[in-house]
Amino acid sequence: GNSVTQMEGPVTLSEEAFLTINCTYTATGYPSLFWYVQYPGEGLQLLLKATKADDKGSNKGFEATYRKETTSFHLEKGSVQVSDSAVYFCALRRSYNTDKLIFGTGTRLQVFP
Amino acid sequence: EPEVTQTPSHQVTQMGQEVILRCVPISNHLYFYWYRQILGQKVEFLVSFYNNEISEKSEIFDDQFSVERPDGSNFTLKIRSTKLEDSAMYFCASRGLTAGTAYDSGSNQPQHFGDGTRLSIL
Image (cartoon, rainbow over all chains, first blue to last red; front, side):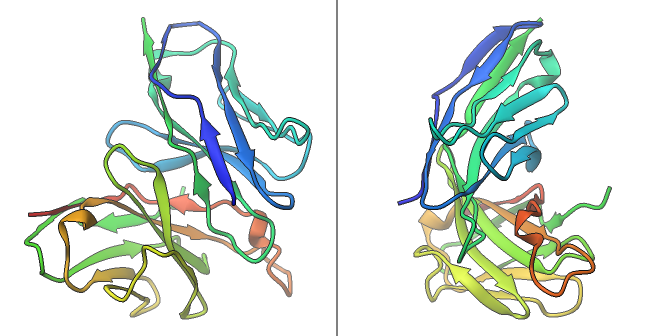
């Protein structure tokens, strides 16, 4: 079936450190891939997306590249800030017959000054 | 920036009671969704809704659940007889359709989520 696997958290970093949160997926066809972020007490916000292989999504200094050969969509940021502390969810949406999102378990990021 | 709004932010209900969760999607969106997140678990899809009917539902969305778009702005989720295991955060989402097309090329449009309603069943 279709699924998303994320690295377990929490990920704890100092400010200005490099961030990677791993995400791999299993899906039939050519899914679209997303990263959503959930700040404390808030809902899910779309962070970035990629809709086909080799696409790179980027927003607010975060990047992720759709790698079909490794079925991965790892989230990266070169220099994290305290304000990036949140839970990050990787998600996929199949390209046909459905538009529901399938989420990973979420990875909590904690950034300390 | 337009946003999806959900009310109430927290709902406490006795087991066996009916509950209605309310959502106001983004005004020009045509596709609507409910998801839920049990504490510490994944965000799970419940149902999608388009053109005044359910387009897809998950195994979780049994006969106790129903959705409705009672007017041009609201989208509701009703749970008829709540159970303890219905305690969760419920998220509403909506998605737009690319303007000027005769078909749904909006499948690449992202879903926009509300802040959620925390439902606590006692």
